[in-house]
Image (cartoon, rainbow, N blue to C red; front, side):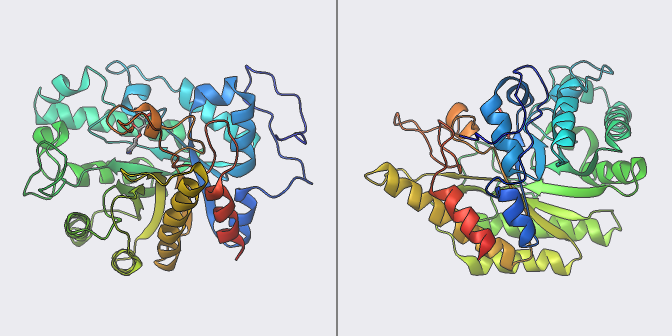
Length: 364
Ligand code: XIL
């Protein structure tokens, strides 16, 4: 597909997949020309073993985020034993393709290594020490290469009425971190990050705030309340990442979402779309073509509102349906034998309507 790639691509290498100067512009170039940044989540193992995947990432993305390699499970598989190799693979790839990398995530209630939850129960002093060691060690390692990290991920509790088995009335999700350190654990993480790397952009990343439903409205309210509280206490924070795992069964309307982004902006925060992908509705359109057009339509309506609200950075959570959690993750995948077609490229890495509409969106 990318016949013009300049170098032979050995399967074991952090790619030498540079896009030749005369290639058709990638999404990265088109977005940049519009003053936007386009990027995607990547998997280190595919960057080094799958030449077509590597070429696609090299061509399309200006900004990479490791899908797994920056999570606790990857970085600190055993207590006090850090492993930066998978993350370094992403960093090397990015550097050879003139791409930036953002970090994900310094604190999350998932992808916790088995040792972590029991260790957090040793007491607040130990929990604080564990958090501090992780954040300072990781940020020391990535100081030169990563200038934006999701410091906290998904800390807002799901409002009642969700699929989540334990919705709560409080604003914060009940997690081992909340239990170990109390409600100011978010502030502690942000302060530790600021201290460890004073010019790092500190991002607060979350999901479920996009659609025009009472549930999403409640989640927006919760997020705004928590973020406002942090800022009022003088806590360092620079940006809010909106994951953008969209669900077509939910209505989307620009106005409430734009207003939400503007409110964040008025608080002095940047906003970015960090994990865009689209889950199709329960009843699918009759043809692949119609399905792909509908996905593209929905995603572009969302992005138009995001940019109107001030977002300047857009990352998809992977580029293709082939390598997506939407297809691979049991809790997220469809149960009707169909596969979500929620990415710009299909399962054979062919561009779909979503890719075409993105290109159009960036050039209009
Ligand atoms: C997901 C990955 O895509 C999966 O491969 C993994 O099994 C679980 O995590 N929100 C996030 C991401 O912040 O880290 C999640 O990534 C998707 C939801």
